[in-house]
Structure formats: C-alpha cells, structure tokens
Image (tube, rainbow, N blue to C red):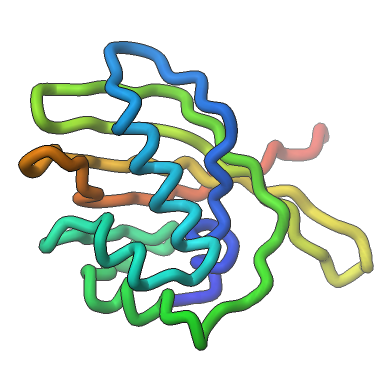
Length: 150
C-alpha cells in the first residue's frame, strides 16, 4: 500500500450527499462510517464495517484485501491527513446490493510552498448481509487535472 491512502482513502469526509436514484439511508451511512473510520485510523471500526471478503483497488491499480487494509489502518500508523471534500454523485440499489459513486477533492502542499488540488473518483460496493450493510469493495480512480490551455 502506498501513501495515496493518506490522500485518497483515509480522510474521505462524508459531507452532505446528493444521492440520485432509489436509496436506503443506511447505504450512505455505511459510506460515511467507512470514511470516518479510515480518517481516524480505526481498524476496529473498519473490521465491523467490511465484509469478510472485502477487496480494494487503489488509484495505482493495486489490489488490497481485507487483512492488508485493516493492518494499514492500525491506530499506531495514524498520520495527519490533508483537507478533503467528499461528494456523492450516484447511488444505485439492486436488491441487497448497492453501488455508490462519488468524488473526493483533496488539497496537498506542493514543493513551491503553495497547494495543489486533486480529485479521485470512488466507487463503493455494498451488500446487505442479514440486517446490516457491509462494504464489499472500493475502487479509487484518479481524475486527471485539467490541462493548461495551450
């Protein structure tokens, strides 16, 4: 796992969601709880939110399974995270499964002493297991910054 987790995965702030399509409030609540647990490096909370076969795909295309994700978010590994803003673009429910697509804008310092803003698209896949929604998978896809006019 790479430092992108610090940027993209861990501090996804679950702000006000503008969900579209049929939804269950518990679907967006799971996204919020998941992101908050990552932000706090709370592996114990994540353990209760992730499905047994959870899998994650990083912006670099790396595949991380549940044990590696839980190890990464151990409290002793906590780091300061950059300011971020999460926004939901779409929520789709299909029976006991749901897909939430959102974006994260984050601000990082650059070598010149200023800041740069980047964005990541995030797709969450959830499944209702018994009475609870569990996170099955998350995929992060970097969004290319706009090109300067030539």
